[in-house]
Image 1 (cartoon, rainbow, N blue to C red):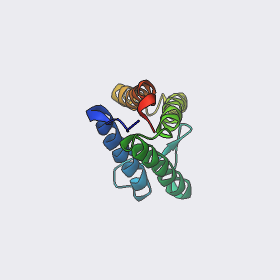
Image 2 (tube, rainbow, N blue to C red; image 1 turned 90 degrees about the vertical axis):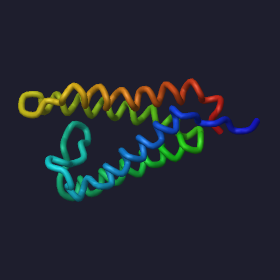
Image 3 (cartoon, rainbow, N blue to C red; image 1 turned 180 degrees about the vertical axis):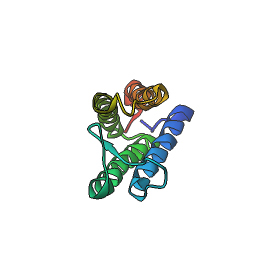
Image 4 (tube, helix red, strand yellow; image 1 turned 90 degrees about the horizontal axis):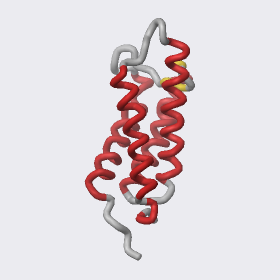
Length: 129
């Protein structure tokens, strides 16, 4: 059976994931104020930030490649991505709710995009090779 087209929606998601991966690669350079990779609810600095940002950037870039090429490995990565974003947001909120609360837009977009990607990939898993 020939591979099916990824379509406009998954193309947009692949591009969004690539953008997120690039921003994670750039976290160690602190190009934006208050920039740093958040891992398990803690904003990292120094060596930890320099390692974890690019590491997660690579994982997200692999997922973007999997979506772009309609590969099966993109689906489990998307599931893990959704869970990690949700866990990160919950832990960050628990640790920082009084001093630096998350804007509601960050929560909606941060969880909504990976969750929508996972749903779409799950529905199209027969088209993944």
